[in-house]
Length: 156
Image (cartoon, rainbow, N blue to C red; front, side, top):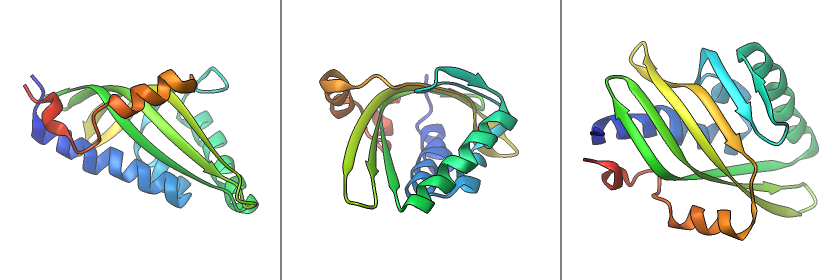
């Protein structure tokens, strides 16, 4: 059984903060959402990284976007949310909207699966896997998934 209160806490501690950090280009806030022993896997590069390597690519990526005048918005839809006893597993589809300084805009979709744990009273991502699958099927899956604040879709 998933506790709706745990999902609300996950939303506050991770998902809304994740979107804000990404949308504001705030690498430090984004990195702080992860545990110091995070495992980050997948993505366009199809690699596995620990915390040090994750930071080493994340900080320059955010800085490069700012230097180019680019921005990225991210949103999530969930297909599964399990949370109990300070542990969580959440799966779904993300939508990235990238905007270049010249106004060019591109939308990308992919799947994600995260595992989180409560650390010092706050939820943090311990394992983060994503794939960069795209196309119409992923866009349709995104649209049919539950929004971040729809915790009742997973309660029970």
